[in-house]
Image (cartoon, rainbow, N blue to C red; front, side, top):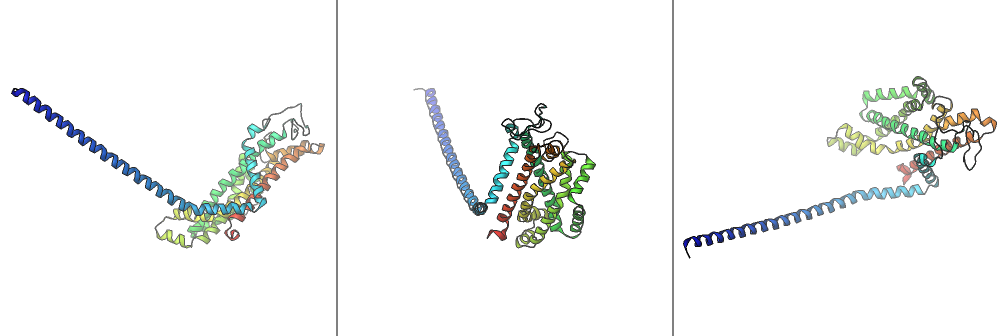
Amino acid sequence: MNTTNIERIGMRAEFITWVGNITIVIKRGLQVHRNNHKTKLDSYKKADRSRHRRWREELEPRLKEFRYTLHLLKRSPLSVAGLLLVVSIIILAIAAPWIAPYGPEERNWHATKLPPSAEHLFGTDSMGGDVFSRVLWGARLDVGLAIMVVTVDLLAGVIVGGISGYIGGKWDEILMRVTDIFLAFPGMILSMAVCIVLGKSLTSIMIGLMIVWWPSYARLIRGQILAERERLYVVAARAAGASNRRIVFQHLVPNSIYPLLVAATLDIGNVILSAAGLSFIGFGAQAGVAEWGLMISDGRAYGFLQGSWWMVVFPGLAILITALAFNLLGDGLRDVLDPRLRR
């Protein structure tokens, strides 16, 4: 065997050895990677189990309190009835486009003032509109308007009352004097004045009622925060360096909000009554709009005295039942959320 062949065989052996070494290194690297990946997965799983366990431990008292709240709510049949009525009314309002057999402004001029029948469950009005359909469409307007007014006023009251109650001093004086100015005017008169200035429409009613309702929430949350701001958890948060905004909106307001939720639930029915009253006397919705107060006004003017009682009775019952439902629910929430009545 010549020298050239011997060199070739040596080179091949070195190459095979080199490839083998590289293969071993790659296999060891893959094995280490698999082990590291498995270790990471195990650590992640342990961390997830630990977080899930801590989350369950933190959530368990709240779930226990929630179950106790449901137990208290079930003990009051009127509260359960109010909750069921509120849920039913909201579902009917949302589903009105699919439930109502006629549109809100659909008219049949050949079927005016018809009494309740299979074709028209609540009869028809003086312009041939189906009263049942208009009552359903009116729920969307009146209930939606009331919820919007109460929500905006609740937020405004929390901001104004929270700042006034926690900061105090000149800010408390200024904000409370502004609140007193609004409270000095009769609510309905002030709402009527706003409707006159802005024009007669549902938007004007909404703005007018928003202006009227927020001061009561500001006063209520201010009183709650004044009673809470010297508690130990507030002192601890202040000592830990928490900002005033954090203390107010993450500590004080959540612990003071329950009376406001009860008042807001009760006020939804009152807002519906006020909005219907403004529309009834001509300060609200324009003619032809499916709004409960306006329907009662039109029924009184064009049909009630002539015997068409259904034009007034069914929209009036809708207002009565809706206001009663929210009042029953508010009373139930008061009994459930008030710590003095829970034990």
